[in-house]
Amino acid sequence: PSAGERKMANLVEATTQQQFEDFLAKAGKCLTVVHFQAAWAPQCGQMNEVMAELAKEHAHTTFVKLEAEAVPEVSEKYEISSVPTFLFFKGGEKVDSLDGAHAPELTKKVQRLAVSDGPGGAAEGSGADLNQRLKKLLNAAPCMLFMKGSPQEPRCGFSRQIVALLKEHKIQFSSFDILSDEEVRQGLKTYSNWPTYPQLYANGELVGGLDIVKELAESGELENTCPKAVTLEHRLKTIINQSPVMLFMKGKKEAARCGFSRQLLELLNGTGVDYDTFDILQDEEVRQGLKTYSNWPTYPQLYVKGELIGGLDIVKELKESGELVSVLKGE
Image 1 (cartoon, rainbow, N blue to C red):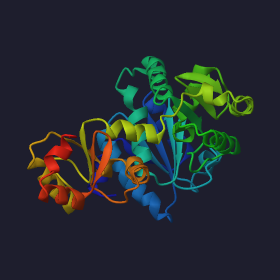
Image 2: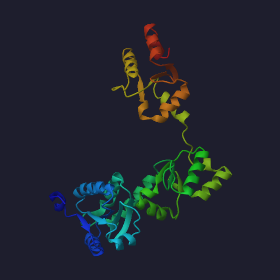
Image 3: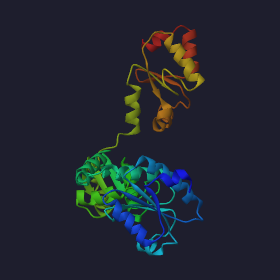
Image 4: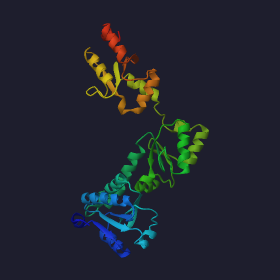
């Protein structure tokens, strides 16, 4: 190891089961991150660099490297089946795990788990913090699904079925992958007194699991239970009517992101008429939806009092014919 690595007291290697247990005991309530690694796996080397960086930031956390095949007693006890695998311990108990070389996930978990660690750890307070976090998540969207995996890639059959039901009934929902967060996964079971996943919430209240959602779908109640999704058409109407003159463009008023949008801004600025803009680059749903809604395939698009005027060429023609100002004023 280079001198730099040797200096870091909280980045260590365990070569025996005894050493491993000593490190856990010494850390007490503070977080210990154990990297089960293999010399032959290049991604383990990369993750060790990530650990070295994290060790600098989190002085109260112990980072342990452990050659999985060299200390089989420990690897087998924790059923390590692949490298790199990371286990997180507090007070000698495993509190979380992460499979694979995912630097952002590792960083997130360390930041979250190390929070209540400073000396005299606030471990008692973390129950209340978790409840706050769960409440926030439950209310993150009118309809929230806690599932294994994502709607695009469900990681269990029940989650796949519930996603299909919600989509079939055109219910707009946000989801949370409980496999990415052991703390939420365990905490939510207690919080909602519901032991299995997936779990569906509407307006922060538990609706239930797959069976209940199936029953609601069959009885036609599902649409009433889940808050109505704001349809895209409704959203577009609202944005188009935000202001009497609305320009849908690439970029913002101050910084156009394409030549046509820039030219149209100059034309509008020349009229002295007030207008608002919407940056379609920030919102793919609006960008695609508006083309169909207005039956106009390109941007920028100019609307006056909710009606499409057209794109750059039409605005140029209006300018040349001297009609632009009266059109913008809706006369």
